[in-house]
Image 1 (cartoon, rainbow, N blue to C red):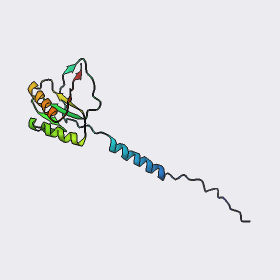
Image 2 (cartoon, rainbow, N blue to C red):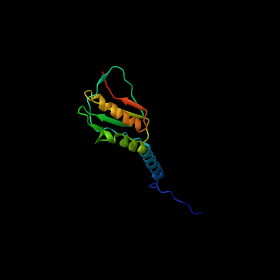
Image 3 (cartoon, rainbow, N blue to C red):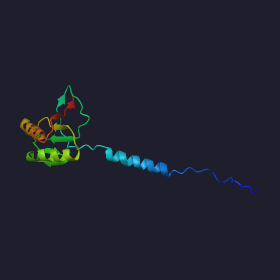
Length: 133
């Protein structure tokens, strides 16, 4: 009878490769499914509001500076191009809410023109950002 000897130096080893494969697959899944927010690209001095609510599913922001400049997706946009840029962003990532971050000294007419352009692009829900006050 041949006897098999078990060496003391040999230990049971767990193969970690399948677990690492699963972790990497999950990482790729979460990266792909994460929604990215399209920030306006500038900071504005927002007016204060006593009552405000947060929009959780908004991912498009339009900023309007006090001098009338309009910023969208970290770039300056002319008033005539706001609708086209919103449509492009909607094609990349659909949403039903756009948030306007207007400076408290921004002209009312510019804000209304931007709101009209957003409505023409197909968004019915528009929120105006305000600071807590």
